[in-house]
Image 1 (cartoon, rainbow, N blue to C red):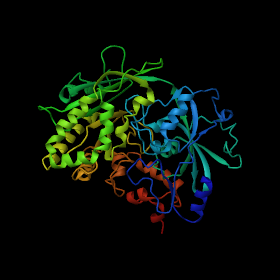
Image 2: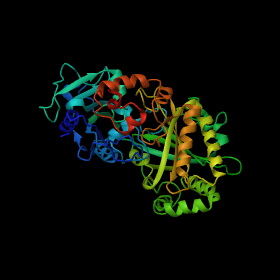
Image 3: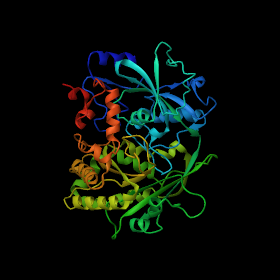
Image 4: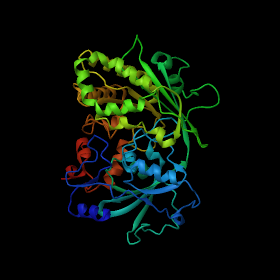
Length: 470
């Protein structure tokens, strides 16, 4: 059916795109003509190991592109496997997180797309393509040139580094992904430790953030966290911003889960926030001076000397994901971390003086450099800054757009494709912030030569192929 729909769109000179789960609030998935939902592309698939160079590798798994992360976690758990890193939400599809360079945190790990070894994608004309790096997992000599589930569907194998690095993060603009083969890890547990600190202390020489930025061990001793991130209060309390440092330590030995995460009642409080978001917006609109102490309490409530659970339950930040909120996220060079965050402090203060305030802590996460040409993490170890605001707070969109615009202009920040509030407009900015933008665009034009995969996203950036043709 997927092959047929793409062929039909191509034959009729229509556009076609696929949504993920609809979690991203940007316009990246939208087409005005054919728009597909991946709900029926959500099954695990057989990996034909006779096609592989290393058929006995137990850590490779193949699934359809529309499988949500939560179902993928359950499936892998049943195989005693796990994804090596995850973001804080599990409702997105595996293709959706890959196509937008969504990520977790910890400089040992790239965006989730970096766990893709091979992807099968339906291109223009309904042609099934299998795209891998030059030294890909598939053995060309044993590759039969057909789809595993449907031998009547021919598959063209492409093993090319540039094409692979253009396709894995392509925002759905080079074709519609049918399946991905993933590199996984053995099942593991995490011990999460959350500690309260002050900004000036962690950025000082030898402080936690200073060590992260300079590639030094963040803890004294031999045991180091595999994953780490920081939340902060945008407003100073007694002259300094408060921060909450999260460290996560990996264990392949089962860890016993005892008690609940954070301070007593934290999970109930998080659930309450999703219910009272509109009264909270009203409160902050009428009493903006309450924002700093409310955010401070939100940080304190998460302090925890140690909480254990299976990996994917630790990565997931919980019911607060379902708050009716908006967010922006930008990626900058790791070395810019302190300057960018302190510029964000200034922006928050400027808006607070106008009565426009934050409703939640901001967060900074750390991601290994990526080879994907238009990943926010392309070519450099990256700090990702995320700002979240409950909908209904006065002028919250102005605040989010200002963050994105100012940080892009002043630091070359790269907006998250799924969270961009349409600040990226036209063709002028992408090549300034993505060194390989022109390389990506050349490959994109090759795979979208008729404009089959144009959409609002490509229209907004001025790269739609149909509008470029006479």
